[in-house]
Image 1: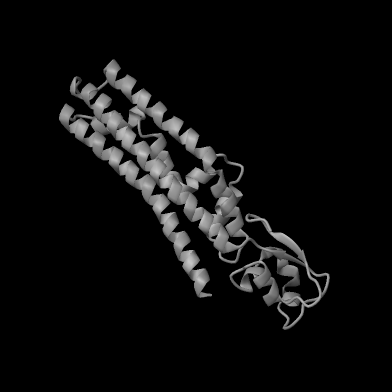
Image 2: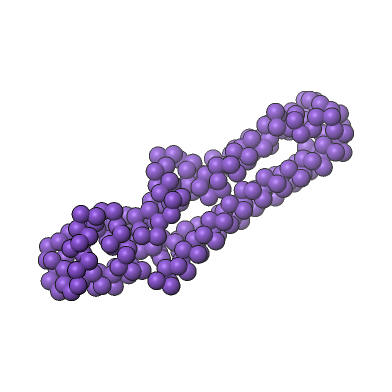
Length: 237
């Protein structure tokens, strides 16, 4: 049985809906009954006792297994995000702040512009490296959308499977990713540094890095909590 797609099962003699649930380690009979692929045979599946021999039934992925893997991936992603933003803070402190303090508003010295460009390229490289490793989130979102506990977000992620950055966007939110990608855009800092002293600009810079870091990481945490709640819901069924 595939961990991320439906399995087609041909009913054999003596099999019941309950036995299929047990054989495929599903959470409940609803997992099969609510499977979109079984909509035309739902009445045949809902009968008491043995199922019709040679009936083809779509078996959804095991939601427990999918959720467990997704939670593991989210746990692995969080340290990567934290390490990246910690490095950004260190780079900003060692390279950008001295450049700001040697300049004055509107902070357009060659040194400031060069550091901003370098930090922007550093962030984009990190995003480009993390995104391919987030493809599995798309596959797991598709798998969850096939189960009776799939969420609206899972269905949306499954529909975005053609987007190479979709998994990362899901994990950190499109808003968080947008803030991250634009973190070192000159226009962003023109607005934030406008009229400020060198010290005030430096302080605001470090505060904003922390803000973006929090938004990005909190989204991954939120998805982890949602996955945990779904798993607890399955155990209570």
